Image 1 (cartoon, rainbow, N blue to C red):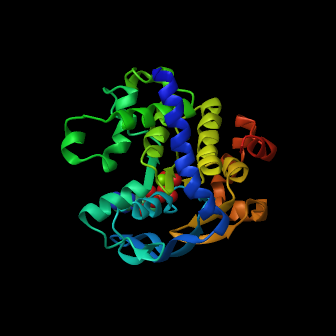
Image 2: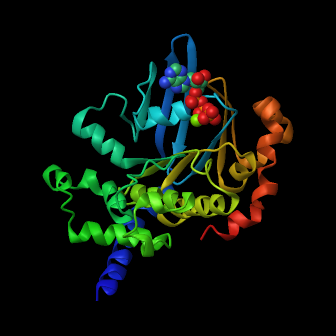
Length: 297
Ligand SMILES: Nc1ncnc2c1ncn2[C@@H]1O[C@H](COP(=O)(O)OP(=O)(O)OP(=O)(O)O)[C@@H](O)[C@H]1O
Ligand SMILES: [Mg+2]
């Protein structure tokens, strides 16, 4: 009976998301606009006059060598870092000035996952995922962790989507890195975001878990229609999974095109001495372009 309920909730929840998302994807309308965004730390310009338009439904990879400004750019979009100059617009609305409830709502709409998962290790998996419902739960209920049946069903449905419902009662710090990142993805998904920001989500994972997590992100993008912007160190993974690559160097955008346009020559310019390291990734993971396409459904 419980299982049946979860399945019904899974279906209605995916249907709910999918009834909204494909319409946006078809239109391909610009959702996120970044205008002359700059972040200075003292004399260092971590992000330097970046302007971008990201339409609904894209899987965008941000690439570039260490220190290029990739994390700072994502953190500003999520408002974890305040821009020194410039604006971030969401469907035309300036999100750089949001405060209080509106800022909370913006953070619900643009979920973020991190290299180090950021789970509450001592809490069980289900509670960790339920944390993603905080923005949609009244304050007093979330403080007391009084989740509704609907919230539990949605959290379990998300865990089922990524084959980890059997781990729901386990402590988060007892899971493998790949499992933890999938829990973090579920937590992000139950926020029902329009945009998922991922900062080097596979940097701490082995090749097998790298593939599982990247496939999960691809599924979020293709199945649920959620726009994904993902910082990646491995060029080969970026090429395999992303629709569009944005290359950054010294805080600036120096490449913005489809992966096929990223020649080895450009990659070497982008990465300098690190080029060999980032281009060896495919051999280690066995990832190919065909693999990414075959798992896109
Ligand atoms: N809080 C901070 N205080 C001072 N400088 C910072 C801070 N955060 C980032 N920087 C500097 O800004 C620049 C960009 O850093 P950022 O972390 O965005 O790079 P990145 O492309 O994400 O690098 P990596 O691939 O190593 O994660 C670097 O020079 C970094 O030292
Ligand atoms: Mg970074």
